[in-house]
Length: 387
Image 1 (cartoon, rainbow, N blue to C red):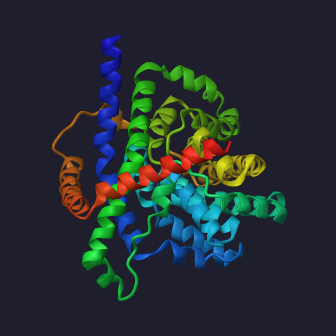
Image 2: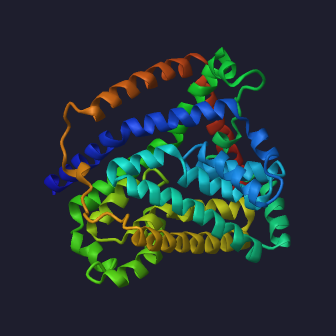
């Protein structure tokens, strides 16, 4: 038993070391963008659900945080600031599926084809989601959802979403390298880590345990790996449902995606699993609190349909183009630590993180974290007392 636990922890540790630099540099770029673009400006840019607005929402999302909890909370704050509801949902999708750190980690663990598949599928998923929202999410439901959103019910990342330290005025370079800009970057960077570390660690532990304990024959049978045609049909339907029960975030689920690929899941099935972070059980409960039970149920069905549909499109297009990998080998899980580019990039990334940590600590970061946590707990207590 002890040997099995050690094996799972070792696999989780190796995967974590392999993706650390990608997380650091992804969060750093996200923090820089958040430091120079305010949430208010984001909301002002999204007045309707026309194609141009959806493209802007997707671009803003791709430049934002990759944390699914933060993305959901920011989308709700946009709705409260009168951004179009569908555009806010497009922002939410893009900020978990089109972000740089997700693409980097996919490339490291699964190869560039999965990065391309996830980003291409993410765009298709947004198009499908917008089309489905127009048909099934009627104006009356939008009004009811907005009314519920204005009640201020707390979610897991409400404090993170509400924090807006972005610098305004002056050139991009001046804003970024000003004292306020550097402070904002440090705060956003460490707030992202504070909000995501548990989900990332959980994702790595689940992936390590699954890789160590669950035989590949189990995944092969679930995903019908012995029947390639059936596997392509079943994979996208099952992928998001596995994500629902493992409930890890958009970055934390990539190591498990590598395990599923090695185990026999179809290309589209793995892509659908990666997309599933926005319908995991804790997120569905947040939708219920933010927008009401009926709206949450409709959103869940629309999102699931968009995820499955996008995964089918990716499976077909990438298969036709000959871009689906022929081998199933997420090698990182079996490699030990060595003096390679990963180690050097991790050292550089940790040095940058240390400098940002110093700035974070010197400018009241821990106090702000505690204040946000207290505010979140107070809102949660008020919500329970109301019920």
